[in-house]
Length: 127
Image 1 (spheres, rainbow, N blue to C red):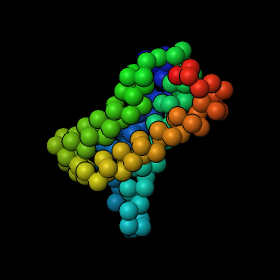
Image 2: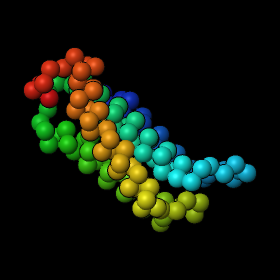
Image 3: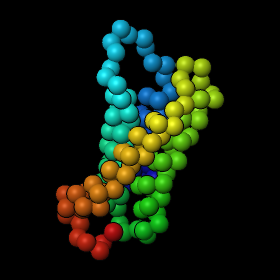
Image 4: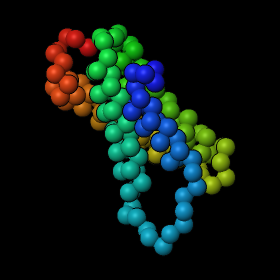
């Protein structure tokens, strides 16, 4: 899989690292809800990269596409929240973070279904 999805795997690894490292204390207070926006953008970006790398591959089944581009990122989001809550002392799990992550995954679906195929030159029906 790393041969076919190297950037996707890098993005996934980056999300895990960013979600598990301790957050440094600062005097700067971000706007209310800014962290949810960051979560949405992280998952939108990562899932868009997954879609892009997926469209570069030979045609594969719809179930595999759904699994890789939709269900696995949402499951990973839940796993990260559980790890933050139960396996770290510096982070806490937040189901609203998972909701923001899921929104990012959902926003990536039209990107992956309509924008990425046009950019990659792949014709409809070749997915």
